[in-house]
Structure formats: structure tokens, C-alpha cells
Length: 534
Image (tube, rainbow, N blue to C red; front, side):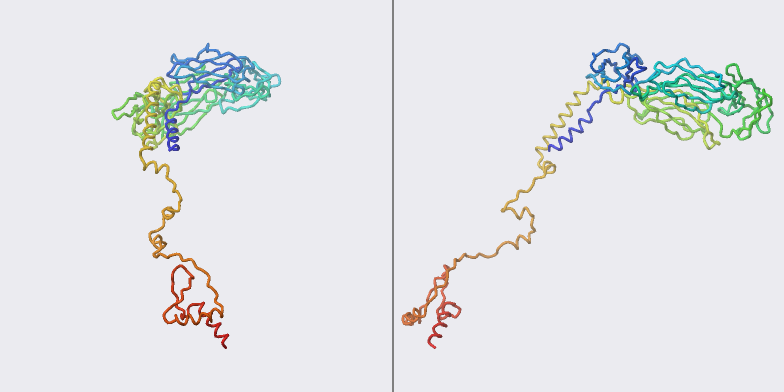
């Protein structure tokens, strides 16, 4: 019974257990400790915060971080060496204060480097410089790319605040940025600073033209993928079997032409199943390109988004897309600003259902579209629509409890205690249940040994005695000498006719005749007498 009660208590305790809010702290640039408790979204409770380092005094927060008029964090000043001591925090505002202990030695995040400059050196190399507050205790990493291609990373010698690119090309545009981290010689850290703002050197002279059909309404072509071009180009284009037309709607960046939108209409149809030709002019020679646009169609994001609770108690999300039968859609949603979850929608459908949503969660939903394979397909999804929101976030984070729970807590504990009492009464009163939970062990004894071994009925009957035997004590036979035998012959002969001798050998009162040959004493005496007469 004790085992069952312990198991039940564990189950009840797991249901009603409350875990404290998760407070996360980080030392920022060795200047202050930044703590937050909004990892799972804006809390519904306005907490107060206090903290102290080991050996110090508890200090209430003087610089709260706020979101939607609620406290979500605190910045507390600190000294450079405080990070090696244990840091304690207290979060108050619910039923009880939540205390936490933090080790911040390896949780230091520096600010990004400042004063970034890049210039061509006298050695014909490209030099990149920056400033960081701590020099001897800082590791740095540089990231650079050419003509907006893939970023390349390169570590820098500890304490150094410069980086060199050997013999750069004048036809490339270089972008460089840097980040810093506390080195292991000063305790180390798990966190890098954010990347600095990039600095640019050189210009991009690339003329690579890329085109895309946008929502079946126009063809958008651009030639600034590798950066702003060095000069202004003119653009013309046509579909196969069509007429070449000059661009009438240029795209500009920093007063430089970087692209063109070519409309699709009756006079200039956009047949994506035909080859598309472009000509870029402005340099020493025109640059001609050939494009296949069948799978390069990008739709506009869906519009008229609505979300509402249906009569079936499910949450319904609706939207509109110009093309219905030829469109695949994908919905993205999250609860209480947590991780986004994606879900595909049947082709042509413009609604999505979330079954039995929780009223304590805030739901965000957005959708995007793509041309389906039934209509030729496309490699491109539309941009995500603007999110729509339903419900409100009533949790401090994934482990915390809101104010409404404090009202129900005594009721829940009372119900749990009542269930335990009823279970105990059932275990005591119900004999069958008691035997099932705690089986009775057999008590061995000579009286019920057969019941203990559970012998079969036939074996019991065979082992029982069917007769009674009286106990008879036995005595030794008395030896009779020949002389005694002769003297007694005369007297015995007179009585031999009708008398018998009773040998007192047993207490069973068995009479044995003298002439009976089965008496061993008589046989023995007779044999001795006959031998002597001879």
C-alpha cells in the first residue's frame, strides 16, 4: 500500500509542480550585467528584480528593460573582476520569489569594434583597421567578401587590430567587417560580439543580368547582385519571335541604374515558356544574355489575411491569392513568440485550421505562395505575408505560471489531498484490492502442510491411513535347560491333555500351544532332549 501511495503522490506532484521563470544573465563589455526573463515572450506579470555578487549586498534593479509596459530584464553595473564571483538573482512578483545562481566567468559579450577604416597601403595591399577597448585580452575575427559573393572568415592574431588583403583587384568591390571575443588568457568567453558595420573598398564592374517574372505582371531584371555598378547602362529586351524594346522603367541605386521592370501586356506579352533575350549597353561593347524563365516566376504575397475562431472551436486562417488553381501555399505560425512551425496547404486552398487553440496562447500566422507544378512550377516562393495575431500571451515563459493560477492553487491542492484520502480508505476497506496490491504470504505449519503445498485430491487420499494398529512391547525368550525340562515332564504330562503353556513374551495375550511346531522355544527344547537320549 505504501508503494501505491508513493506512486500516486509522485503523479500528483508532477501535475501541480511549478517551475520558476528562467532568468538568463550576461556580462556586457565588462561594464554591466544584463539579465532577462522574456525568452518565451512578454510576461503577463510585472516582476521586480534584485541581485548581488558573492560577498556583496543585494541591490534592487535601477535600470529595467521593458516591453509592452512590462519589466522583461535589468541592466546592473559591475566591475571588471566581478565575473569570477558567483552571481545571485531574485525575481519577485508571483506567489513566491524565484532565486537563481549564475556562473558568469565565461558569459561575457564585448561590444562590436569601432572606428573601422580600410585603405590601400604603400605595399599595394589592402589594410583594414579597427579599435577595441581591451587589446591584450581580445581575439578578433575578420569577415570579407568580393562583389557581394559568399563571406569568407579569417582569424586575427591575438591583440592585433588590423588585417591585410594581399594585392586586391581593382575590378572587385571588397566588404569587410570584424567581431571580438574575450581570449582564454583572461578567462575566455562563450560569446562573440556582434559583427561591426561593414566598410567597403573598390567598385563592382560586373554586368551579370538576372531576370525574374513577378506575379505574371512584369519581368524584373537587375545587374547589381555584386554591388552598385561603376557606370550607367541602358537596357533592352524581347521574347523569342518578339520585337526588341528599350526599358521604360529603370531601377536606381545611389543615382545609378541597377535594373529594369518590363511590363507584360497585350503589346508585350510575357510568355515564360519562350526564351528571353537582354542587351546591356554602356561600356566598350554591349553585353548580351539569354534567359529561360519557365521556372523563374515569383508571386506577390497573399493579401486580405484574417483569423477567427470558428463555430467548431477551431482557429481558422484565411487569405486571398490572385491565382487559385495554380498555387501552392505554405502557412507559418508560432505560439507566444516561440519557434515558427511550417505547414503545407493543399493546392488551390486558401484557408488553414488550428485545432482547439489555447486561450492562454498568442498565435501569429503568415502565409506565402508558389506557382504549382500543374502550371509549370517555379523555383521561387513569394515573400511571407504580414503576420496576423490572435489571442494574448499569458505566460512569463515556458516554466512560469500567471496570476490566475494563484487563485486555483489551493483548490487544486485540496482536491489532490481529498483524492489521496479516498484512495487510502479504499485500500483499507476493500479486502480484494488489498490482497491484489499486497498478497498474503502462506504460514508454514505441520497442520496445514498439505494446503501450503496445494496437493491434489488423489494424492491426499492415498497418503491417509485406512487401518489402526495397536502398539505391542516385545520381551526376550527364556532359555529352558534339559534338567528342568525332565523334572517338569511328569507334571506336564498330566496336564498335557487339556492345558497349554502361556509364554509371557508380549502383552498382546497370544496363546501358543506346546505342540505347535511354530513355537521356536519348544522346537529348540525338543531337539536338545532327543540328542541326549541318543
